[in-house]
Image (cartoon, rainbow, N blue to C red; front, side, top):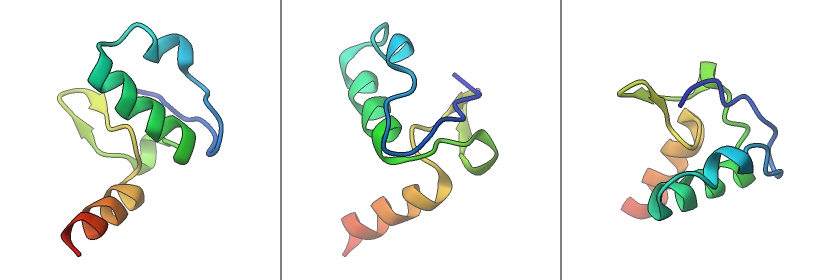
Length: 66
């Protein structure tokens, strides 16, 4: 899953998420709503773009470690 350049605060890729298993679907919906998901600003793991950008990943890690 790559090339998820969308807009924040909107669901841009529901036609992709609806085909996923439940847990990844939830994670990517959350990312799609709250993050722009630009590929150039996102981690890529196993040829899959993470559901949120690097900045949001850092924010979520910081919130869980606080």
